[in-house]
Length: 150
Length: 150
DNA sequence: TGTGAAACACATATCTA
DNA sequence: TAGATATGTGTTTCACA
Image (cartoon, rainbow over all chains, first blue to last red; front, side, top):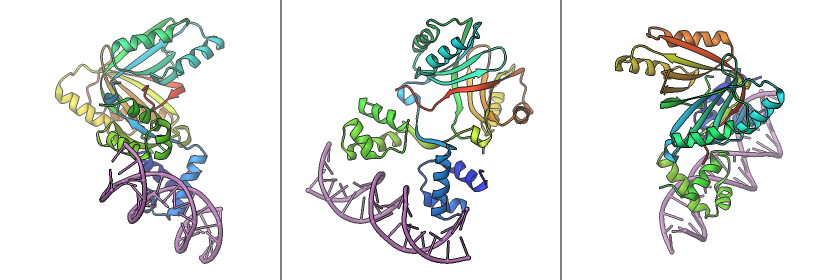
């Protein structure tokens, strides 16, 4: 369903989406036309889910990354639905996972200052039964990439 | 240094980088030329750090996200240098932070299976003094975006 | 800052193996 | 069915006013 050539194409454009079709085509050794068809197919099937510009967080005053672990004692589907809907719509929450093990949910939040985090924290816990929230602050971002290991 | 119009432009292209300059220009109400110059400036100054295609992890067999907490008892600069260099070059490690508090480092790893994670784990701990590694597996990804709250 | 023209890249039709 | 060739169209880039 996705062959070696497709993988090569993905590897290239997930690193740099400004590459022209001509350029990609020559690198993966197919015709421009074929390359275009393959890229189009990858887009239509959702394997390529979008093309975006990456903004440097520091430059726009969002240099503070906070990792938040959440435990709940309410495991009803009503609670879950309400919690996930509310939380994923907070723009500062950029990643949000339901976890196995001790912690029920894990969030990654980007803000400018600890005070800004506090505002987001209050938004998250408002009207929700949450048994434990623990935040840890990133001191340094060593790596943060959208490039998948293909 | 970065005004409201720049922010609007960033907001648009960090969501969808396929928008044409004409389209963006009309939305933020400046001329195509001005818009082009602003985008160029944002790129040159590194505020836009790149343009990438986002690949759907599930589609390429990388549906398992693992969050790894690492504690060390060796806080020498030699150790730190060696550890960060080695770890950030592992392609499965897509995020890597130095943290404040209990945990020293936090990694986000994308793999296909738990067995694949084990291989990455072995790579990370090889030849390194690490006092504690604890992995938690994501059951469900509820949100994962590159869009910053601007 | 705006205009316009050249360069470039994209999308598609048509043809071939 | 997949790839190659050819071409009209749209977009970007940049010089100049």
